[in-house]
Structure formats: structure tokens, C-alpha cells
Image (tube, rainbow, N blue to C red; front, top):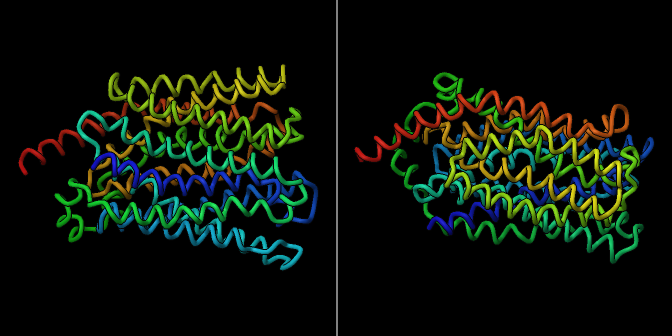
Amino acid sequence: MARRAVVAASVGNALEWYDFSVYAFFAGYVARDFFTGGDATTALINTFIVFGVGFVARPLGAVVIGIYGDRKGRKAALMLSIATMGLGTIVLAATPPAAVIGIGAPILLLIGRLLQGFSAGGEIGGAAAFLVEHAPPGRRGRYAAWLQASMGISNLISAIVGVTITTWLPDSAVQDWAWRIPFIVGLLIIPVGVYIRRSLPETEVFERNRTEQEGGPSPLKRLLTEYPKQLLTGFLFSVLWTVCVYAFVIYLPTYYRDPAAGLGFTSQQSFLASLVGNVVLVIGCIVAGRSADRYGARRVLTLGASGLLVIPLLCLLLLHAAPSVPVLLVVHSVLCANVAAFVGVAPSTMPRVFPAAVRTTGLALSYNVAAIFFAGFTPALLTWATARFTVYAPALWVTLGVVACLVSLPALFRHIAAVDAAETAEASHA
């Protein structure tokens, strides 16, 4: 059952991440199709701003889908989030370019991103709670690690699609129509995800607390009145969780080919780096999850966060000193391995900060408030900062997340210890 839960959570979560990564990978083509005024850098920034605005809807999705998941079940929340993501993807894939419908094109692009943001806001809480509550004792790390590993798998798929399209089709064809193919591919995954998620039972933890959760006060009200410290701690922890992924896994493939970065890599070379890096990310997440079960989550998280403080800057210094394809592949692989060391453990750790009655809403809200500032607008901010400030902006921006995370860790594990003790006592009484 736990393995089926991994598949159910991972397939839908992979679809969520796939649509986000495809948008980022093909941002240059989207920019030329939807923002025809100004220079290429301005158009790319506008495209990433729309990418970021989608994150504004994430807290709303976190609250709506989170409350739904805490009241009606983790599975119900996962079904709602995957359906909403599919609707947003349809809008993105079908919207005509600005040359055809003018200002309507970027408006529809924004609507599609808002729908995707709403969906993603609720997905993380429902999926993480679903995995942690289905995992056998002592194996939360290895099971929940698949939530973040599925992100790497989806990025891997989008990178393969990107390499295939940019290699076999001329750039003019990619610009005219072929950049929409990856979004259409994403739509094909939805029926599979819906089928798998519908086939699983609800978690035992939710069923044990169903009466209290359906008839009690709103999970949002309980969070704000009873668990404000947990929300703040979860937010600080999530700053690094969100920013390292969006700076290094999502943004850097665009950075490598951005003229402002001065590296001179082609689209194919950037997609290749992403392909190799995401293989490393998937493996790294699984290794990190198993290490957390064996050596303790706190030790692995501290090691991963500390690495993100120094390794990214050293990697970018090396890449700018020797901008060749072999160095690019090594640098991006090292960065993805460092990201995996932290994010592979985060999904098994954060849900345990909140008790079952508010777990989906609490995780989703704290994560997605952090995501607005440190994920959604990170590509736009780093595109601007790279052009106007320094080419080492990605590494410097992530440093802020490291500081926030290290400050939050002591309180995070105090909250986890309290929740674990309460749930153990409750299970023994039941």
C-alpha cells in the first residue's frame, strides 16, 4: 500500500512540476510569442514575471485545497489539484500568440499560470501528508523522498522533450508552434494520474481523526490561533526549500544560454545539462531520504543546507573561468546533487511539524507563502540581477534561504517531537 501511495503521489506531483519546468525551459520562445514589444531581455523578464504571478495564487490554493484535504481527505485534495492543473495547461497550450489576438495573449497566459499556481498550492500539502501518513514506521524519509524525486523525473522528461524538439526541428518551427508540444504531452499524463489516485484508500491517520476534522473548527482558524509558531517555522524552512530548486534546477538552464550571463551555451547544451543534472537530482533525493532514515533528518538537512552556502558560488566561479560543455555538465550535476541533499529530506520533515487535523493546510500554506517570494519571482529577479548586478546572483540569492533555514531548524525539530509524541499516544489509545 505504501508503494502504491508513492506512485499515486508522485505521478500527479510530476505533472505539476513538469508544467512548471516546461514553462521555464521554453521561456525564451514564450517571450517572443507573447511579448512582442521591447528587447529580448525585457520580453524574457515579462515572461518570468507572469511565471511569478502564478505563485500569487498558490496561497489561495493552499488554503482552499488544504482545508478540503483536511476535511474530506488527502485523496480528495490530490484529485482536485490534478484536475485544476490540467485546466491551466490547456489554456497555455491553446492560447494564440500576440500577433493573432494582441493583448489577449498575455492575459490568457496569465490566467493559465494562475490556475496552475492555484493547483500547485494545494498539491504539495496533500501529497506530502499522503506519503508521510502511508509510510511504514522508520521509512518516512525514503518514501517521502519520491515527492521531490518526482520533480526531478518530470524535469528529466521535460528536458528530454526539449532536447528532442530543439534538435530535430529548426528554431523557426520551435518558435512558431513546436514549443507547445511539451504542454500537450503534459495533458496526456492527467488521465493516468487521475486513475491511480482514485484507486487508493484514504490514510489511516486521516480516518482515525475524520470525525474531529469534519465537525471541528476550520483548519485555517486553528492554524492561525493554535499553531502560529509552527507556521513561522515552516515558512523559514521553506525559504530554502523553494529558492534552491527554482534558482538552480528551474532557472539555471535559461541562465546558461542568457547573453547577459556571458557563458555562450546553446539551447541544446543547456537542455543537455538539465537532463544530466536531473538524473543526479532523482538519485540524490532517494539517497538523501534513505540517509535521513538511517542517520537522522536533522543531520542530513544541516549538511545539505551548509553545502548550499558555499558550493554554488564555487561552481559558478569555475564555470565562468572555464565555460566549456564538460565543465557545464559537472557544475550542474554538483549543484543538483547539493539541492537533492536538502530537498530529498524536506518532504518527510515538514508535514510532521503539524498535527493531522491541520497537516495539509499547514504545510501547504507555510510552503506556498515562501514560494511567492523565493520561488515564483526568482527567475525574473535573477534574470534582472544577472544583467544589471552580477553573474553570481543565483548563488548569492540562495544564501538568504540558507540563513533562514539554519535559524529555523532547532524550532522545527522541537515541533516535530511534540507532534510525534501526541500521535504515538493517540495511536496507542486507539
